[in-house]
Image (cartoon, rainbow, N blue to C red; front, side, top):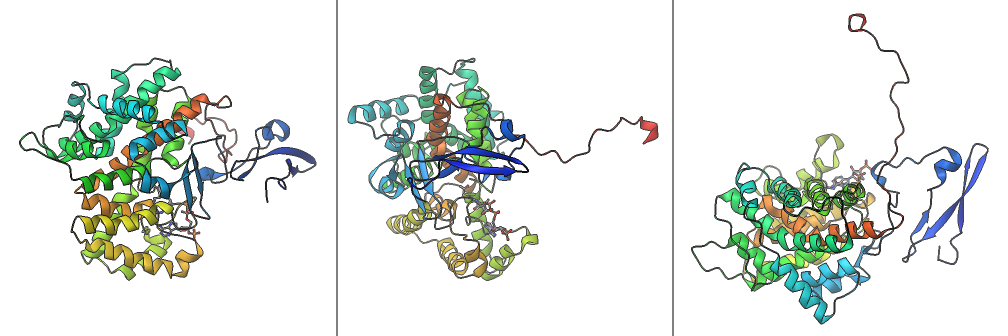
Length: 432
Ligand code: ACO
């Protein structure tokens, strides 16, 4: 269907009722039936577990076409941004849906650099948590705790929201690095304002007060690329969470803290860690790649080919295409080899020629190759998802701000189809 041929309404027949529901068309031709009046007109609701057929908002931030494998931030193809842009510019792009001017970029770079320090008292929060706690839990706690340092009771004004956004973008790398330093018992490293965004992260992660540490520019560029590729992905699980929490009027820190928790799960951002664990189990001879693939096809095995499949992409995830090439580039530039890359390539080759994966349109997603690059940068496995969270921060914030500008936004409150017992009388304990 083209824009011109899309009908203005969709007819729904329910018994003897017939209703015309308005049809909407997005700027990329996405057709949607507007069901907002459905219940009022018919008494019926829709059923869509996992919300795979539900457009929950109008958005101008990110477009993705899962059939064709297209991803664009505010119209700019991810491939072009990956090649020509940098993370700080991409953050601005997502927040404003346009590229910054020289002056805007300079101001934004200044702001996201000069708000990187954490309140000294926040260090105590890190120190009070167990060293072996997962850093995603530590980061969720620290981000939530920012709302106690920057209190904004019930005033989500645009000015306040922007200040909170800058604080989060600037402080998230510091929080991430502190969560790592705490886990290994090293002193927290203060941010360095003379370094770029990615280089500063490497400094806070790997520097110590005892020795001079100069971030390797190849590593900084590789990290910057990873952050760009993770920066937004429209209404995924964690972003929907951020919007949902924000819809209650909760502040930005609280909303994003919930997003970090949602991202942690192995079916979402946690898959990047799970991929490396899977590749290592094959490398260490627990089972061969072929044996693993046979297991991944069996529903009752509880095993999935991690880093494969996607709710929206039914084609190669364009981010995985970029990352696969980047694996070669980064390992080559650093003069390293990693047998895990060979295992990943073997798994991919088996999957792409196996009818189970082909018929279900399961292709590598962003997490399949990202872990190999994180590993080459020396980032420990437990921190992979934290780095995903640093990258996703501008997306979460942009989506949260967009929600707050949306005149049609309402508190998120789905309905349900109740299948439990109908009304019955309470039975006294001795009669049960
Ligand atoms: N390995 C084996 N089988 C799979 C896989 C996989 N990785 N992914 C999906 N399938 C199968 C399912 O068993 C199902 O089979 P069936 O039709 O015979 O029942 C079919 O493919 C469809 O899968 P669903 O789970 O219904 O797809 P859904 O859209 O709900 O889930 C998800 C998407 C969660 C990403 C899934 O593909 C998966 O678990 N992948 C592995 C985890 C992963 O890599 N997550 C990261 C996603 S990207 C991100 O969040 C950053």
